[in-house]
Length: 127
Image (cartoon, rainbow, N blue to C red; front, side, top):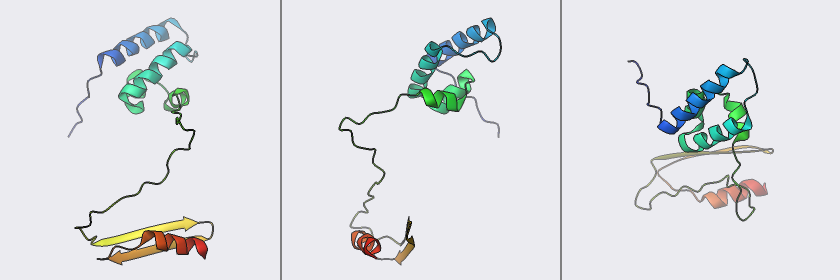
């Protein structure tokens, strides 16, 4: 079944036309001006990296390097752990969790019970 083409938004289409105009006036492999990269970064924030690079025929890595980094207001590093809570009324049918560190690897597989993850992790770290 063929995929249907997703319509390009008007602002992305306008930038695409501006970029094509610039490309027609400059030799192949010329460096794009920062104004175009900035506009492309703005489009990527609105429409996503993949859609923007595809519509504008830009290098994904080149655009990603120019994307503004998001600063945390408190200066804290981004969160790398997310706690997933299971409703108390529902008992998990099966659960498998793996931890890996420089010391080794631990795998816990349980059925029908909710383990005390904090105690398991603490015991893993203390050994």
